[in-house]
Length: 212
Image (cartoon, rainbow, N blue to C red; front, side):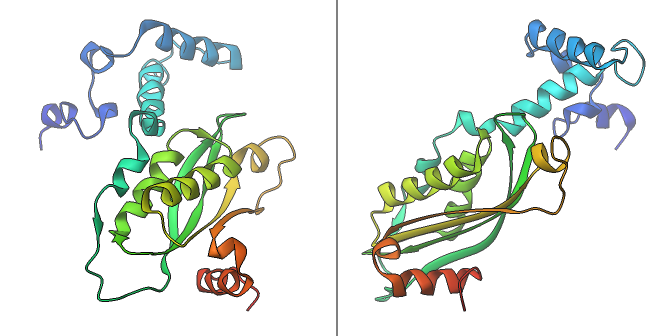
């Protein structure tokens, strides 16, 4: 690929030079980022920073693309021919990235999502898509956990839903108390996983976060 072709590639706007790249970004957004750069003590007009406002704006549009989708729509297609399967369906260690709504700092972690089907199942990739749909918004981990669980409960109407999220928060590790290596764990149990202790222990053990 030539340099001109690379610069015209739609896969990474940072490789594209010229005014066309930032044509769809409101001027006040670019101005706000320049102001922030100046306020922190640097010069937004210097060579290394002159294109930064556009890059930052495009990056944040990508980070927050979850606002442009309905995560529940990923659960609209279900499968009833499951050969009589009626045990736990679990997707473990789903990586995700979000941003804290208090400091707009990264939240990076993994989620374990399980449900006990009643009469049908959904494609396993759809569970990850639900997670990412909610994660790609400004978030707090507690709400993210509840939103994922509530969405699956409402759309699939299973016998039980269990969501456990483990994540690190840059708002704590890179600023403030500055304590790296700390993981926050949140969970939401619904249906049999909330009401029946044995079912709850089983799903937590399958997730690798139980007592066993």
